[in-house]
Image (cartoon, rainbow, N blue to C red; front, side):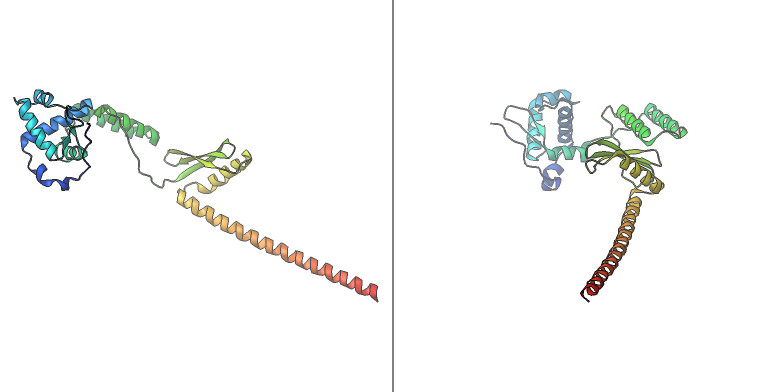
Length: 261
């Protein structure tokens, strides 16, 4: 019968077992995790005994692995398999055992050269610099490189709407720092392209040098002003219609009175 990984527990749930690990137990556990990360397979005692720097028999390794299992750091997916690190074990490895090596001189020189090249090329866009940074990280670590930029309120240079089909449009935001953002939005079905062009021209004219929150505040104020103007015009038209209706009613009443007399 297959056994499942024990329920995840925090490091605080098993302080005594982890604190009692000696140097040999920590070394065996570290080798187990490293081998698992390389192969993705359960790790047996014989495999660990071969990679340890000292001479330690598989039986001795199994005894240590039993202690590690009691501490909740490793588990067996089934009876005849090796051991895998638990979630607690992986977190313990990262927090307590993982060693981060220092950069070599060649790597430092490569980073310095790329930074100087980026500083000398002022015309590069933010996307190009982020791509270069990602490639540099990936090359140094031999892993996938990801650079995440925090969202900040950059100031806008240009806004344009591009039709994507019925009911959909693409908003292109060009910021002053050269970065570009694209966002798909819903628009009324049947909206003519000329309306998108007018919206692009209007927003570009009133958004240059402003952040998105500032543009939103401006649009809200413009809509409030437009609504107020429309209400005032409607009230004026309504008053004129009422006056004309009253005048027409008075005229009709006067004609009726003259006819009766």
